[in-house]
Length: 263
Ligand code: NAD
Image (tube, rainbow, N blue to C red):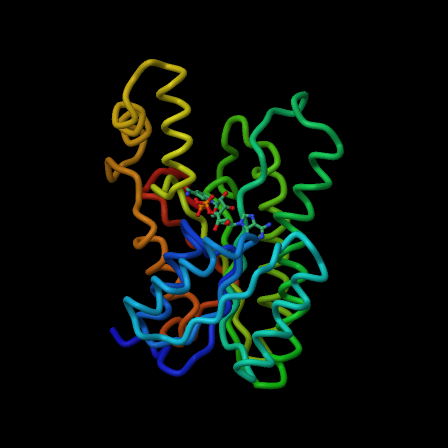
């Protein structure tokens, strides 16, 4: 299927590794020019170079921390200054820290609000006027399976990602008249660098191997394994692309069937 991404401009945040990088790579493969951001110049430049090398696409790296309001404004200004437009925004950031209610302080909540909720809100504030002026646009928010089913020990993700879904559903309604679609992607277990670290920590604590820990998780997934970043990235690229032109306001699970609910 041709997704119709040829000649489009996409901004993917938090893309020096993991899901963000895989999404930027997939969009570039499909013919989009991509702008990416991360906090550290070294890994960001390396990611940009790898995407350029494997796709030949134009890649604009911009150092920015999406939890810092000034960085978000500068990031989008730079992208619009360089490309003159932005067709696709994929909001992504590192995950908020784990913890149960009594492990976390009010300050932890405030930091997580800045990282998980306000980064998406501010990115939308920054791109929506340009998309409106263009008369089209597509926004995909990276969330988690936790919006369907709370995950143990992840109170901040369980709570704040639902607020992002509220933003997505409301913007989908408000911006449809401007031909701007807004959707969310909800990954389940996806084997990124972050998950590799998590598996290594679990293995160190339990005395099992990393693969044994991965197998324990896979046992709860109907497809019998974790997803790859590429599998999640293909779903994001589809939702973001003109191929999904009649889809807005959805929360698409990419979880190997792990969420068993009917809705
Ligand atoms: P990761 O840790 O492998 O990658 C995160 C990326 O975000 C890195 O490039 C990092 O440099 C960048 N980053 C972190 N904080 C940033 C900030 N404030 N500003 C700019 N860049 C920042 O994580 P991942 O596995 O790719 O996950 C991406 C998102 O998806 C996270 O929010 C995570 O919680 C969520 N998620 C992941 C999974 C999974 O199984 N991998 C499942 C559900 C949800």
